[in-house]
Amino acid sequence: MTSSDFSRQLEGYGLLTAQILYHMPDHPGLLQTFLWQTQDKAPVFPELKRFLTFWERDIDGKIHSVRICHRDLIGPSDWRLLDAEYPIH
Image (cartoon, rainbow, N blue to C red; front, side):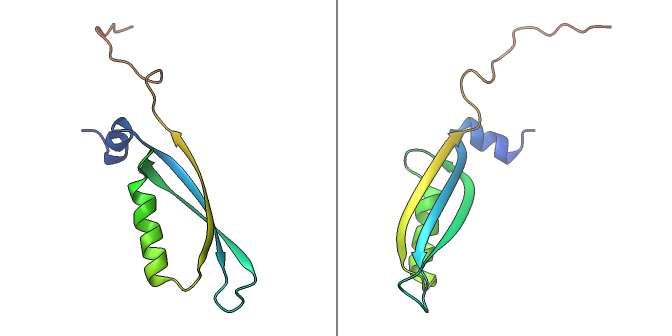
């Protein structure tokens, strides 16, 4: 049985890092940085959209900008199916 993380990687999910610059609620002229990482699927980024919706709904700091970096953890050249297995004694 494969792990759920590995299954998600085979479905196209990769590592997403988001740098969120936001205005501090008490001092709107100052910007603060928040880094967030998760597995997400490019180019739609459903997890990032869900997180930003949560942020805008529940967190007081207004978002200034979001920079993202995404990297597929498994690609076509990283794995392949084997036709045979040869035991070595």
